[in-house]
Amino acid sequence: MTSETVEYLVVAPHPDDAELGMGGTIIKLLRAGRRVAVLDLTSGEPTPFGTPARRRRETAAATKVLGLTRRLNLGLPNRTLEATIEARVRLAEAYRVLRPRVIFIPYWRDAHPDHLAASLLAVQARFHAKLTKTRMKGEPHHARRVLYYYCTHLRTHADVSFVVDISGEFDTKMRGMECYRSQFFLGRGPLAGETLRYVGDVNRYWGRMIGRRYGEPFAVQETLGLAALDSVV
Ligand SMILES: [Zn+2]
Image (tube, rainbow, N blue to C red; front, side):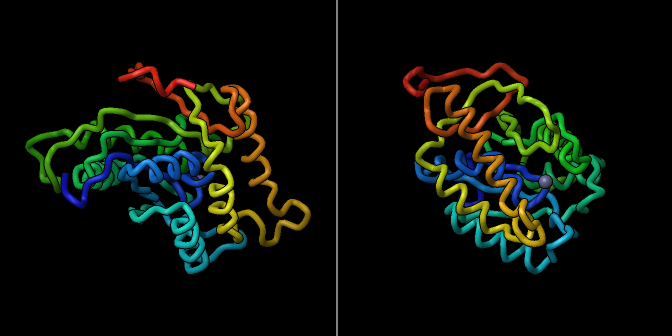
């Protein structure tokens, strides 16, 4: 494995989605010494109270809180993200360079068009990355696992496959999310911080479901295998 490669790659539509959906799991993987990278597909801007420069600063601050050393941005268009062939090739090239064993992808049902496009694009690029006889950068690569995380704008109950215990990482996750002042606090009046409280409630709920304090839910489409049972909580 070269210094370029990672074991776990989190594909996110916008900077803040990785933190919201699976910030605790990212911290947990990093604390266990795993090689993790976040690949944001777009800048996330414009938003009502953000600017590109502010969002970059907030993202850098959150990245530091999480302890991430690798965070990339593919520079695809925010608000009009589409699973085009061109975007698929660019993401597939990133997979071929980073060569993740596991890719985390936004859940496949969502109310936000960028999130829907990101979910489809990320799974299509997984297949595209293994093609031979192409002009793409890097060598063919097929990530062994796709795990879906929840950063959804859809107001529905999650169809969950498993939950990761993030009781020890929850406080740090919250501090990471707090970095995105323009997204969760500025101009929100009495609703300032409401998204963070909601995410906290969701994590508390899923934690309770596994007999722990906080948990982050994930879903799979392919059957998930366990190498050992000693991690089952
Ligand atoms: Zn988003």
